[in-house]
Length: 350
Ligand SMILES: Cc1cc2nc3c(=O)[nH]c(=O)nc-3n(C[C@H](O)[C@H](O)[C@H](O)COP(=O)(O)O)c2cc1C
Image (cartoon, rainbow, N blue to C red; front, top):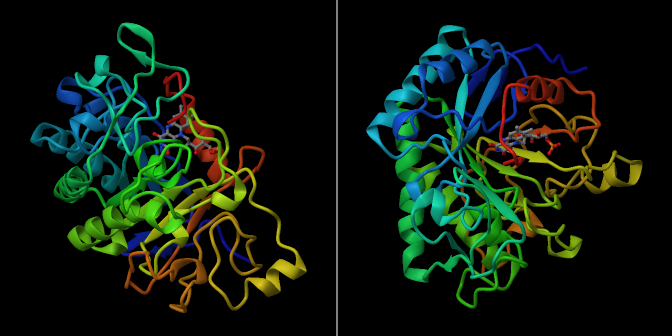
């Protein structure tokens, strides 16, 4: 039986136990959207978790979607994150920054410019700004030539995370933010190589993950995906169009955090089906790979969903995964995130 409190090697990270604190936006950044001493105290208090995934953190000023979320694109912010890293490490914990570019889930009242997105598809609803709730604006569709610059921003933020002493990064590819906007056929109606087929829609996420892995090492990079989950402002994607980035390349990142209210229980049929072939993160867990908790590295055998000829290829051969459970679960990981959420105050769930 898996021991929740046993140490675990997650990519390059040696965790003291298997508890992971979920990312929780706090809207508490200080001057220049830098983490404060209070943030260091908050994370330090929670450092007995094996791993903390920080609140969503913008890799660029244009990637901010809510007031006073922290960034990782200035020296001032790096100094703030260093306080956090030191506080967590002093108590034996590990902490990775969640890089969250919100794309179209933003407003010019927050970032001083029209939000960007894969396509000019306006979200339904309103966003919280310092001036109160405001209707979402039509985003500006990113030009193909601009995408390399966004990738470079993620790389810069990942490098800054390491410079600050953080243990790695998680790419937020869920909840309707920029990376998921590329994955979803309701928000990505591009006609270039980044739209259309599932492989094309996954291309940008894979390019970001590859570049960030190249920069700081894949063993310190994770991807947060919630395949099939309802996004902040979009309907649940049709099942046949689900494109979890965890399953769209042959490169393996250190961890893939997946939350789905639809993670099914293993059946004897699904157990045998999952024994020899690569599985997407939304397929049932096998007995030796619990739905919640770090997973064993899996083999380098090509995943059928990853080997489409028009998709980019990821050559890194290790894979571990931590799956966060649905809210109804009583697992400790859920309890950890629930406890931490009691001090958070955003009006939406990033
Ligand atoms: C106040 C609050 C803030 C959150 N902030 C983030 C965030 O910054 N990034 C993120 O990926 N998830 C965020 N979440 C989602 C949690 O990490 C977590 O996934 C969720 O609460 C429990 O998972 P589930 O409801 O999807 O199963 C937030 C949730 C709450 C309640």
